[in-house]
Length: 436
Image (cartoon, rainbow, N blue to C red; front, side, top):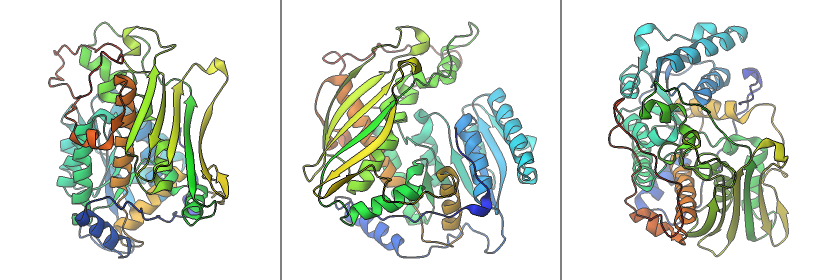
């Protein structure tokens, strides 16, 4: 659950430009230009106290939290539209955020009238069709690429929760949309909140400036506990409704733990390196997850060895084992020729939650009060990095970046109607599972 903090103590963290030397010349030129210009996007109607409007797509716990983070992060935005697959989720989210906003003295900024509450698979289109300036994309990640692409086409600034996709086709769509956002001067903020956590920002800056010497190796860990939204199935639910309500258990809508959750740590190492890996060899499986419908077809552990273009290797360990086992490790480690760092130890801890700080920075970018922010491509690359490792673990093969950029993998079911049968593929078995 997100931390919260008074908006009066918020300090927006500075952005660190990437050193991705292998991006295409056109996108590199655009990114370089945007890093040094104050952008005042045309969608902003004015400066000073001019108010912006925001809408939410995806009214689960993360979406509810994002609304409060945005309200706490700035005084200049109101929430005016919401959309979700299910009415009970939307109304529950709206009720919760109103209660929290009331306690924080911000209830007057929740302005979601009944005709701006949208349900069903087309809800995202209806939210985007309103007069919002910012859209927050917080649905399960299987929908992120579809909604991301639509938001940029609609000319909206956006906050997109990570990950950005669950398959290679979706990830490449997002990459293209991120480049289009740069051309349109649309701000993109992501749910990779460590990039706006002051102790990380300062430490990564020092590492990249040589504080621990030449980087020799790295580690990324998310060894935590299971995430399970739905432990039983209502017999009246269709396949579609069940899988949406129990989304974390199914690869097509979740992406597996290494994609949905462990991305945070892998993204930190990509950020430190200023590049993405070129290949990975991984292994994994389901050691404790029962072979029952509610537990779906994801792994509960994946171990990976990534290699970057300069030969540096990152070891990645992700697992979700029961809490009673008593072991948790959520961390990063970078080893250099002159020392090592956990990517936080050379920075100062801020008085504000990074979940709030990223929204402060986003709005400041939109209003032209700080350098333009588009973190989309960096986090899209981290998303593809994680998908690459999952595919290696599932298939038993070493998977390269080039293979991912050519992959035709598209996991979205063709029919998501309430009557559709959506069979759950078996748990992936190396040698049987086929990379496409």
